[in-house]
Image 1 (tube, helix red, strand yellow):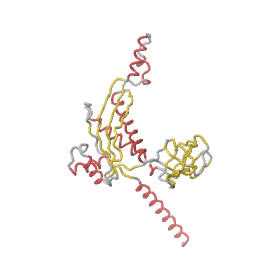
Image 2: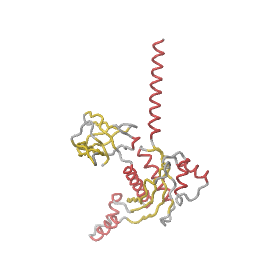
Image 3: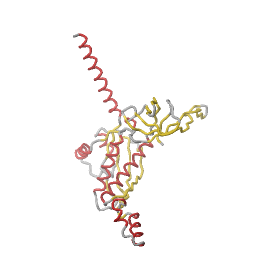
Image 4: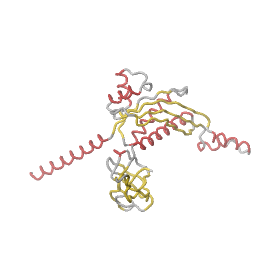
Length: 287
């Protein structure tokens, strides 16, 4: 009986440690509040701002590196505070982000929206008629999208603690689609993905190879550092130190290979070797 009790206590303690570790890892993620974007592009369909906002939310959440304030929760905070035009006053947006418990706030507006015929589909159709082959665009069906869309948004990414504007850029997205709505959604998604690249550039990913087992490469950072499944990473080897004014400021690095992320956990990831001479202790970074 005594042995069984000890066993139960051990299992309960182990479960508690794992649970706390999971919560700690989750808590380590920074939280982002995405304010509803404003449409000032002149495009008649006002839903473009809503679509762009939604695509930003999805992209940031899917990255695994951040926690996103839910849209309904953000809407409740905005309604309670009685703010009307958030995009016109980024300072108020930051206040709202703080109230929602976010570390960062995204505020911005859609400044350009173009949805029209896809020039590639038009060219195919014209050539088909010239050579008496009929409308290639119609023959090809889904192979040549009929519509193309471009969107631009002005975005500010603000640190709620310091008030510092970390990112202030115009981000663009461009894609084709079988319908105008499909093309617009795809362009907004592309713009959101391009914003993530900007976010990665101000928060660069660095890790080390902790273990190698055959083609499996284990690195010591994961989702809480913004790593995403499917990414291809550069592997570099450190060499001689870089000395400036008698002080070591870094190490020279030589790229030696590439790995692809196949599994992401909170604090480590499993990758597959793609190419090169890769060793334990090598540095891993984004290209």
